[in-house]
Length: 323
View 1: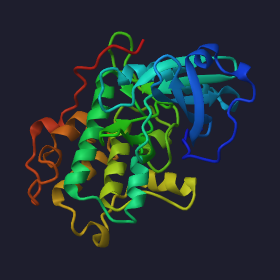
View 2: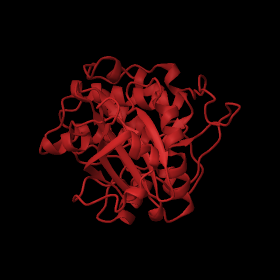
View 3: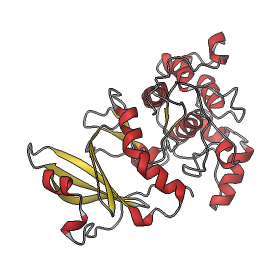
């Protein structure tokens, strides 16, 4: 099943009886208004009973976890999120986790600013400037690269999961689909399972093959394309099946009416991220070293000079945290 987090929704009572809440959560936090809704549960404001500090609590209703993959993702979410977030300034921090027979709860940073999806929509089809886009893509790549250094793949990078704090700093959110791609000895192991959101998922995922952490880079490439195209995605269809077919074909185009003013350097980076050949697709680290990123979106309009290191597979530096 695809795990596709929803966006908001009508308010309703989350807990029918006080007893359905984990005792620790009910004791330590005051639960407030709903601020978001997904396929398996809701996100609400909460306040620490001890300090008065406000957070968000993500609550997953277990009875809605219909298959084994859903259940495995829900069971791992807290652990994977902690591994990815600790010391990572571009990831939403997790503060506590609670569980009972009906719900699993994660207490997270409360971020009230519009997410990237809202920011794109608010511009009404007007693209971000390349310097603005380079900052966002660079910070997103920093977030993903640090996750990958810890052996964690997010597997659902999309504008809805790109949040911002009060100072405008980007924060990657929602590790409900995250998985480890290294074992206890630090050796790379492939991932399996069709997870993610259709428009952003990599071709190797929908093919049913084993895959690696570069699925996140593909998703980042889709996000970058949309930032520079005023919200237009590179691959889509009228139905989920048509979208999967478009992703599988991976026929990347830059329509002149949309990309006329976009630099060759930006297009070059998008091509390297949205490369169907995984062996040639950039890693998150390579994205960070691309001239368009390092120059802040102000690189020359000619094709960037080839850095030999950009064609190398790099897995060194991955921490053995996934046990």
